[in-house]
Image 1: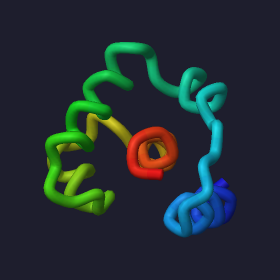
Image 2: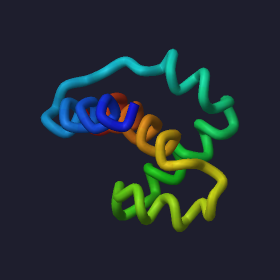
Image 3: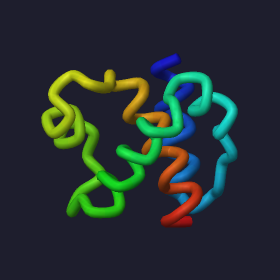
Length: 77
């Protein structure tokens, strides 16, 4: 899974949209997704290390990376 996430990150960072809603919906409920959306909208950086520190263990690396992929696909691309 870590390698797949890395490949998906590369794809969206190059400007291609990915629809991974089904995967994110399985991992995170609606409130969690809203919380992460608000965080990434207001954050000055999209670095995962900063997000991990911000949420202090509420979300694991995989959850944050997958949501960031969804966010970039929907908002930034």
